[in-house]
Length: 215
Ligand SMILES: NC(=O)c1ccc[n+]([C@@H]2O[C@H](COP(=O)([O-])OP(=O)(O)OC[C@H]3O[C@@H](n4cnc5c(N)ncnc54)[C@H](OP(=O)(O)O)[C@@H]3O)[C@@H](O)[C@H]2O)c1
Image (cartoon, rainbow, N blue to C red; front, top):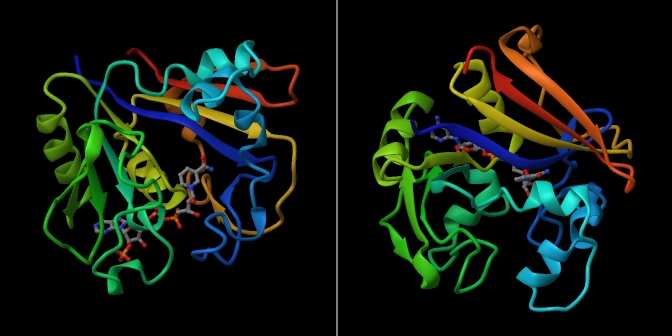
């Protein structure tokens, strides 16, 4: 069965997955890199960057699920680029010539453009559709594997509100941002739909998993 999964979304204690004022120089706005420092410390991240070392504990174990069983990603226009990227015909995302997805990636946007084939198996497709329709397209491209909803927070909220997420891993980072884009706003009572587990890491991050009840 092909599941719809959210993997390793980092949020602050007050529920923000990105800060205020996103721009080309500040992909996470005023949050800077504070939401992801725990990730940069791990062996998984070091391997991705071609560097030795890194921690091999629970944070690393959670991160290694990022690509396992994933056949396609769906992301929002706000993750693909900074505000105004659609006015730049050469914009191909933040990740360089060989993005870390290695699958078809569907970008939800009101500014469609032709697909872009990147190195390493990533192809960006631009789609303007309600969540359920977009998921159908991604699922077909995933060839029986799972679909990752890659963020940002606005599309994760949309997919949660439409009851389309089967499994979700959130990393709660012990910082307060005070402002930004919330992952939870408008989702009162969401916990009733899921079996929820929390695991504390010595790094200070709490990993919370949501598994659709009865799955
Ligand atoms: N903390 C983390 O782990 C994490 C993970 C991923 C991303 N992020 C951060 O999150 C931020 C982006 O998140 P965000 O919440 O601002 O934006 P987002 O969720 O990436 O994208 C929202 C945008 O997608 C388009 N869209 C959404 N639903 C659509 C639909 N049904 N049909 C067509 N287009 C649709 C709209 O853009 P248009 O109308 O402009 O097309 C909308 O404004 C970035 O700062 C990124 O770095 C954080």
